[in-house]
Length: 443
Ligand code: UGA
Image (cartoon, rainbow, N blue to C red; front, side, top):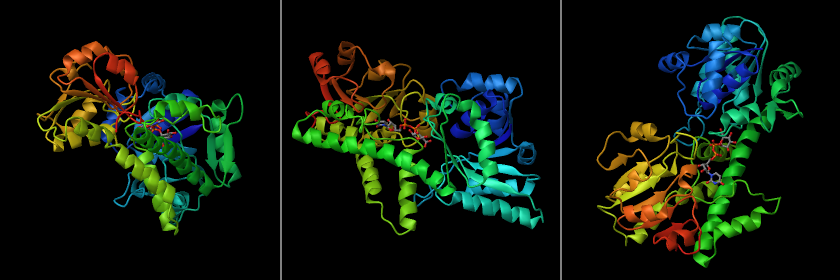
């Protein structure tokens, strides 16, 4: 089919590449000229495993094109995806200006029946606003062209985005138009081979499904972080508790890892946006408020451990960080726990040496050149001259380190493990002090 995608961020680029891979002719539109020319030169602006070969292959064979020209891209399409950003507004609700600008553009150029698909995470009711924005433009030019607006949220995880896109666990289609649903079923048929993963529903339910999924996952994490905080105070080990409860299939082992808080471009933003939506219709979502509050405090955990360990004064100390990205397999630093820690350390007069396998450039871009931040080439280099080590992101490369080497390099051999990568006994046996999240000994 002929597909146009507005927005070449994580969602748009991955979706575009995967749809092209399945034989569709895909045009990706972005207003960022520099990004479009980089993509046309075969440069992928994000680190996402498996994405580069798919983009390059399909770009080379003409199945995947990149442009800044909205009009021709709209004329090309049977199906248009809107996958532009929805950054949080000042009050935490999703800012729809980019989504609605695309909708107006579509209305200005539409020349035949087209299915418009909201792929961005947008509040309930946005499909209606997109419909109105496009319809107003059509009316303004006296055009009478039918179109449908569908909600088709994405459930991609950064770091696994290509895999999630090629092998989705569900495909949610929110629309009451039979024609639109039929077209999307056809588009997704190759992703749906062994059994039908399509869940068709009304548009508002589809919009809410996306928020409900992310809010549920965020709730699991905050719940476990709360249990970890209790475990610390009662002398229990949350890692054992995690295994004990995960064995119940109604709870499950997934997404119950306590840690230094969840980050990224989705959970923090989506939990807040859902709270705002609830409030806007007169409902106070107490559980969501708590999920967010627990996560906020959790991001300060490592700093509190460090402060306490050093007797409340860390001025002049240097702390080594392993991991900067908000999670492994990405270079994304949005809402990363590392940022809260780094900024708190600076505030308290400490310096930071850090290593992350992918997020070095992004960190440099955010913080620029400064004396109190040294970005290192490898994990052990970050320990040179440092007092202590904090683990912030659970990259595989950090899982089995040489504890004796860490001990010898650190001035005060201590590990603050924000992702519970290590067994406290193994670290302590190697002659280092150890703090984990919810591991009974840290409070
Ligand atoms: C999340 C969802 O998992 C996707 O299903 C969804 O499509 C996506 O948001 C989105 O809305 O676009 P993502 O933000 O890429 O995906 O990251 P996750 O893998 O979900 O991790 C989020 C954060 O939770 C990370 O900071 C991670 O360290 C933390 N986390 C995760 C925990 O602290 N504990 C866990 O048990 C799991």
